[in-house]
Amino acid sequence: GENVEQHPSTLSVQEGDSAVIKCTYSDSASNYFPWYKQELGKRPQLIIDIRSNVGEKKDQRIAVTLNKTAKHFSLHITETQPEDSAVYFCAASRTGGSYIPTFGRGTSLIVHP
Amino acid sequence: GAVVSQHPSWVICKSGTSVKIECRSLDFQATTMFWYRQFPKQSLMLMATSNEGSKATYEQGVEKDKFLINHASLTLSTLTVTSAHPEDSSFYICSARVASGGGYEQYFGPGTRLTVT
Image 1 (cartoon, chains in turn red, green):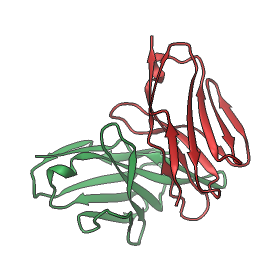
Image 2 (cartoon, one colour):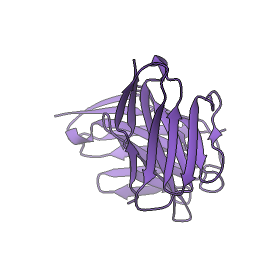
Image 3 (cartoon, chains in turn brown, red):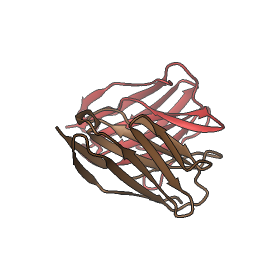
Image 4 (cartoon, rainbow over the protein chains, first blue to last red):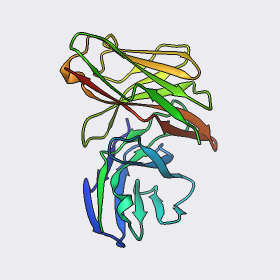
């Protein structure tokens, strides 16, 4: 089955700095890679996703890059703000068939004002 | 976007009793829903995949007789924790699979915090 590794487990940055979270996956057939943000005690919310037919996707301050050959993808947050503080999860799945995503362990991002 | 609700948001029960958690898709039909369990500061652990009109598919290590899942309609899936014990205390989150752009997206419910005393 799929195995997703996520690093780092904790990331502490100053407001205005950039933050990068990296994930690797094992199943070369995986073709859909979403990122979720989960604030304390709340539901995970989809913030951005990328499919295997593109290498990069950007939405305002957040961007995701995908390297299919190396089987890794990353989340980039620029100009971080305190409200970006949360736990971020990456996931990998196949969009066809049963679609059961495999989640990374999560990264706790702390943005210091 | 798709909205998924869960009820109750939190529940406290005594050991040995059963608790039912409801997961509803509010503005769409979901043939497939997922049930997750999440411990503090940990990732989402998939418990089972709930398919409308058929039996749920449980992940390895999850007791199907203890965690009963029923997906009786296209908008409702329920998880019943039977004979609850303190070690069942956790945050339970459901999600619904939604077709999008030739594939699927996943929308989560707000979660249910279960405390077993």
